[in-house]
Length: 378
Image (tube, rainbow, N blue to C red; front, top):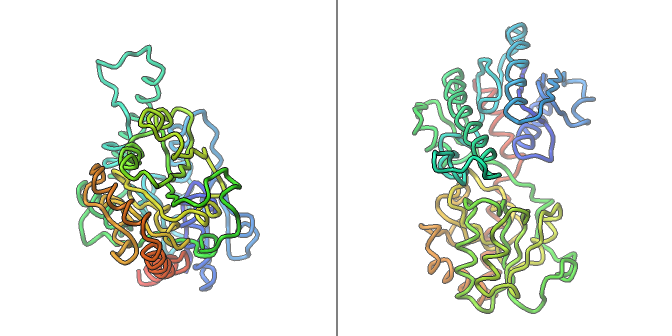
């Protein structure tokens, strides 16, 4: 089979890029030939004899402009070469060209409801430094919502990374019979149980139960505010928070709630797998999450997980492996869940083992096999 993948980056170190990287490796291993239209390609694939890379260089001051340039360039190239391929896989509204498979990591129409702090309206002060940023984010998401609807009408099969994304696709009119769900994978070697380091490496307290939260803490969607409010009711539990603190309101909220001694803001980190090894449980009740890879990474590390039903990866969290809240904003229910796990080492151990077993069934390789099975079926 001659396969074409269109993506901004096909590398291991990025979410969508990692999915395409694993799919590319599986296709190559099965003897298929691959053409990649991308701005960045993993060096080991660039050198592979079964891979042809068509670089799509884009240089512009904003992501919106870069995406438009990529869509135009990739579409122009494919108009001339479309006939060369048995199957074309793309991602969302990344290109204007027709495709056979479109993999969707989130739907902009739903993203718009949860990701913008302040939709630009007349009451916004144009002199406010965040007005321009908020307006740009709103415009960027609005345009992508329109473009991706056209892209989904221009393909045969739409792959959703979770049932949550499949639901979002149906809301914008994608037919049910065109949707397939293939969950993202997880690296069970990088994320694995074991204590190779000490909490003191990150100035974290020893001898106390320690939970972990990780995500973009500059916006309310990840729901750190409810976590902090619930933590007030669990006086023995400490919390390690991974996420950029510049522009975040939560260090100040933590202080106002009297939690400064128990909440430890670590900032942006690249050593998340190591930090996960030294904590006792993972808390992530996001208000909206298309998938939530960090949840499955915590499960792979052998951590019991507390999340919410509106997180895309929540269906993977069985009652033996964690606690799924029906309402992410129910601070009392969250406090009860945090207390239940922090106070019971045996329960944490059993749940962590069950979580790891589930993660082992959702590796990157198994995900990639499902993609290529579909390609071959088509």
